[in-house]
Length: 345
Length: 261
Image 1 (cartoon, each protein chain N blue to C red):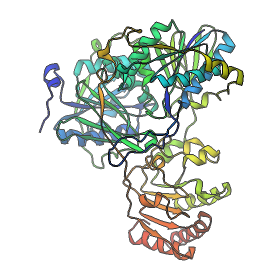
Image 2 (image 1 turned 90 degrees about the vertical axis):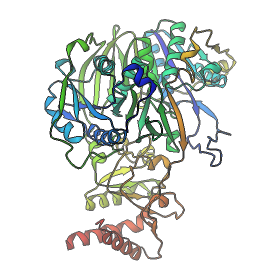
Image 3 (image 1 turned 60 degrees about the horizontal axis):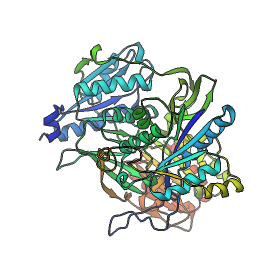
Image 4 (image 1 turned 180 degrees about the vertical axis):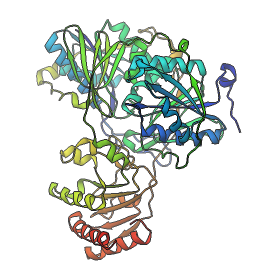
């Protein structure tokens, strides 16, 4: 079934759902592929087309990956002036593109640059934007996109709709969705965005320098197994046990906000509403009480294993498996036993 | 240097829950504070003023009680504080908020730089800064962790997924700042007393000459249609045993049975 709102009929809004594909140094960000996967599902539900916006210097070869990830169409903006993200240049190019082709929905990854670009574009077009969503669906009655996000530190979830203005826009957290596991298609239509749409691309800022530092972030967000520590580990020395468990499991290490606040763990290891969202297959929560704030950073779908000495800790509600006990008593045995199992293999 | 700082009043705690019967927020007894990120924005402004001279105007949009956080800003060292407050503004989303703030800022003066906290602790959208820059038609640099000025242009370091970028921009400019930008100062007792006797200017919708169709609920393209408490329910196979060894063995047996290991 296809939905057509009054606004759609009056303003020639196309039935397309668009996903913004973010490129850093000729590589597509994982979040863009995740959004194409979820965008595919939305498009099928609402009987709409899924298209991608690809912008950058030499990016045309990425179109194949985008078709495989779920899009049937790519709007390509290519050229030297798009080599690096620039607020003014990208805002004007994307806003002009949206005005020319009038998609119904525009989804952007909630990266630093995505959250720089999206609000600026939404303000230029005077349309609605929902920030940092973790759930997306099509409302059965209205056909609108339901943008759902944690609010108030993750204690509450809010679903937001944009009823009249178009496109409906939202940024979506990395790792909130999974990319498609199959290849959607081998190729599709590429629209080379004509130059007359890309006028007056002046920038008021100049990029002087790029400093690369954060190599850790990728690991945590892409890890299949994570061992995370919270306040309940008791003392700082017990972090050694967390590290050892991570090592035997070949897992990444994460932390709750409390440990980052104590200065026991670096901020880039923080998982939760004000930290990172992760989507491992197995999540070991060691001494983590399991506040909503923390759990909103662990995407559903994986298995949660909790170790905590407080049987009433909320983490046990969310956990699939758990042991009630002190981290410093349980972990040494757990590490030894896992080593034994691994050697047995 | 003419500096404007935008601040927001937020609840002191995020431990606000839904009333399970009425499905409304339980806000009783929750005190209000200045949004933590905004304190860093004000500190950045104070440091720029100390180095290059100038004036700092702090602007907030909110209920009349938000006068209190503006007094805190005066105590920290801001020169002037304006509260934009009108029942017409109730229900504003980020677009309507930035539209209102832009009108207030245009009335308040010509600013070289506008500094905002990158996001608020309650809404956490990080959208008002960029949307305000767009409404004012000026350049923006978001996620800033350092601002330097060389007499003609600003050099701002911002965080990205990869690390950092150093960006140069001429005036006027809007910068939204992260908490790692600085450590906000504590106001002196005498400044605090003086600030809390100060009169805060309040501007209504009429004062800033804004169309009521573009503010509040009417001016907001987005609408919150549902709020609910998130639910996380696992399988809850929780092991409680005297012996840690037994507990671990039982856990690992379960995990192997279910092919998790």
